[in-house]
Amino acid sequence: MTINVVQAALLGLCACLSSMPGLGGTTFGNYTLGRPLVAGLVVGLILGNVPMGIMLGAAVQVVYIALVTPGGTVSADVRAISYIGIPLAMLYAAGMGWTGAESEAQNFAVTMAATVGTLGTVLFYGTATMNLIWQHWGMNQVDQGKLDSLYLVDWVFPWISHIVCSFIPTFIICLMGSSMVQVIKDYLPMDGLAMKTLFTVGSLLPSVGVAILLKQVISKPVDFLTFFFGFTLCAFMHLNLIGCAIVGGFFAIMNYNIRVLALRPVAAVGAAADDDEEDI
Image (cartoon, rainbow, N blue to C red):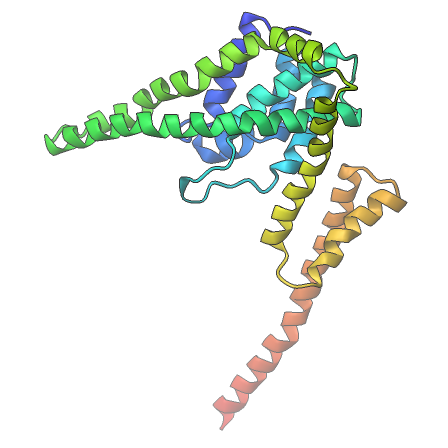
């Protein structure tokens, strides 16, 4: 598997779109197209191996399942994780003869994503810094009464920032990906200490993502029952994620109906009390 110029350009464009709130909003960009699970499908389509892209994207998504950017503070950036880390991991996996279902392939993808995710923070703050230039120019135009210039600040000039900090780095790294992966294979053999360390770290990183997610969604000890129920379905009933999601949907509907029924008697009692007061 190799990455040609057209494929590298498409990956660079996706990196721009996944980090540009102005194009379709953050819902379409950062929080959809930029998520590793969605990016795995997109990268798989671009590189011509959809199953591998989805499997590696899903493995990386577990680590960053609770990734948010509160106040503009980022620990890792999705444009690099999704559109640099996943393509390089796919190149390496294909070079090793893996399909993407192997634990080694998924652990390497997680480790690669974590590595380039750090690079992504530089790209994120680089983009924000360049955007300050356009905003400063826009404020000067507003002071002069030229309000139409704000369209340039919001819709045109940010493309320059993202081309410099998203498209060009992604394009160059992905285009040179084959040679970079070959260097890794030559100097870091599978049975070497370095690769064993990478795979060990990669296998532990998903637990970090799950722990961060639990910290956000678990408010009382009883909430763990719902969480561990999904693992029980996978371990003993051998359901996949889609099956677990369907079963969880059934329980969510039942729980909603129970809560609605529990509220109805209270409303009836309250109505009766109001009638008594009116009679008095």
